[in-house]
Amino acid sequence: QVQLVESGGGLVQAGGSLRLSCAASESISSIDVMGWSRQAPGKQRDFVAAITNSGYIYYANSVKGRFTISRDNAKNTLYLQMNSLTPGDTAVYFCKAGREVAGGKDDYWGQGTQVTVSS
Image (tube, rainbow, N blue to C red; front, side, top):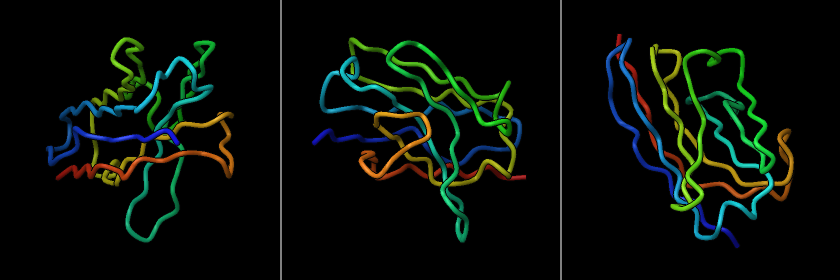
């Protein structure tokens, strides 16, 4: 149903910054939870950050203090501002729309955008 399109990935040196965007095909005000997860080659997909329709924000400990999740309801767009990037942040980043922060089988996912951080 809802379609999600990520953008903003690229190559950046360690210590640099990137801002990812996720454009949704419908009003994000009607989506209970939106968030970001990432997956490195050969690794599982891990939770990064989420924001609920009520305004609660959650971060993985690995990105807390460096990443900021936000939304622009007028533009139906979710953002992830990433600062102080390290090679450990290299992964494909996926946008998610769902009903619970913990995730579920009914989650919708975008196609992902590649983030590569060089040493």
